[in-house]
Image (cartoon, rainbow, N blue to C red; front, side):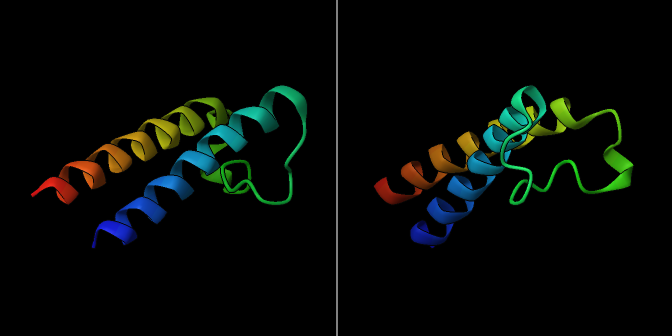
Length: 68
């Protein structure tokens, strides 16, 4: 379970940071998911920040789960 949480947290963090980099520079357009759904039109930066924060939270949770 710990390994799954680590991978999921890393992917969420990567998508969030990649989405922010894509919004600010235009790079990483092929592998970021935030700019693809029409429902997030105009809210890409907010969604990327939420993904990055959620990724950090899952990574922290995986570390705490490992201690128990």
